[in-house]
Image 1 (cartoon, helix red, strand yellow):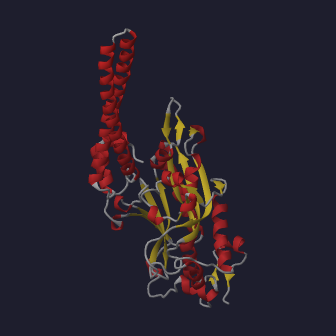
Image 2 (image 1 turned 30 degrees about the vertical axis):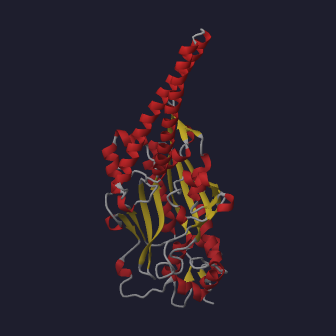
Image 3 (image 1 turned 45 degrees about the vertical axis):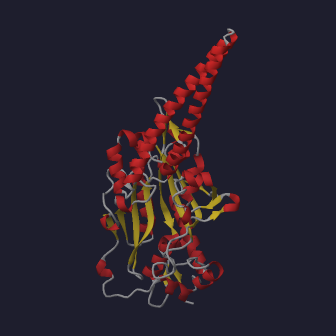
Length: 426
């Protein structure tokens, strides 16, 4: 959640930043007005409660003194104060409920250095690595789903048969290649990040705390009977680990990685944009998460971006890094840099990692703080990024490494995990 004190005290700047993120200006005004109204009602409640307590004491004193008439008069006055207090409390509860909902559904405030813009067209290219447009000119590349079918790596037809569209079924060497990617990413980040194998389902309060509810309920898979939600990424489980806790500042940053299956109700029907492994309801990913002090977040963001880039670079895939503009920024993020891999079979740049700073947006919702040296507590900052999201990387490996004889060369860094240098034709 955003800082409501800052919203009120620095309203124009905060509103301008949120509007740049395409937040409805009217909802920002309403949120500010509700905060001010709650403050007013809080004061009124306190004043009426104080008056009630004082008058109630006076009633008792009058009766004790034997002054029944005066006591009865004060008693009637007390009844009036009680009614007024009940009315204020009812209004307060209504305001509080409305404020909480708008607060929970208001996006995070982008950082000042996030590029301003309205759409993906305004994103800023930071760097390109290993890509030369001339290498692809005049050449025809095979899309990964054809390569995978010819080599028996994927069986999308049977995946759809048992689960519906946008579910992948890896077979034989395909399953082995997927496992190799996961093992590679875990080993690559071992030592820098604590490996955690979290549950794949979380409670509603955890899902809300990470910002996925109530805003993104339609994009998630819910098990209503048990009050559980399937995680869209390990970020949700890892971010919720320290909910309600006060951390020792000397233990920060905490660096964690989790390999999980991820579940998402990706929008759009099956078609050219979702064919093969481009967009799935279920996929495998190694996620990186950091908890840090506010002053550490920008430097830790750079380190995490480098860690995520390194996996793609070692796989020898051409990629680029994009600094997302405010209009293309995710709901939770204050700043995000995307890593996109070029897939020649579809002639597309495919996002394979979003490395984001979330400031204290999630820690406020989950009430995760650290103890300051000078005393008191403050909210920690969260960061996360895909150490390796397997589907599109799997696809890009096939499309870049296909040989004339129909075989696919296994990237050098995967061979110890895959057990062979080449995926031979059937």
